Image (cartoon, rainbow, N blue to C red):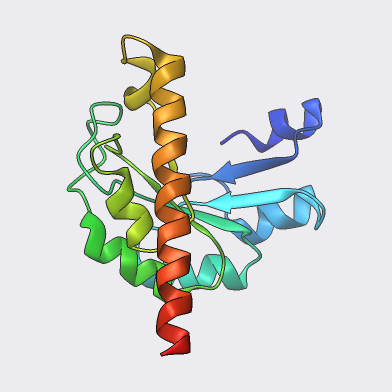
Length: 153
């Protein structure tokens, strides 16, 4: 969210939200070599962020989340899948993601997940992070193999 801090510390990239700096300006300031993520509010915003140079999109809240109580209504897995299909850059699902529902967002096409509560509120945060990683990797592998089988058929 803080492009100035990202530049000052030499970060690999920065993520701009809906109320932050516009994607084209952020891209101009960080240059082509750094990673730029964006959080679109609408399907058209997602397409525009890609055209403007975003490298990935953070999309959500997929489910309700205690971390951002003012985030509005969850978009759900179906809307997430629509965004995934509308762009060619990776989409990271965010908002209310847990070990119980992480597979569903990956099956919907998300490249990954971003979490807060699922890890920091867990009794064993390291174990929770490992479990989420296992779920994401396993589901991605299963999804890719299913796509390959459909292509062969």
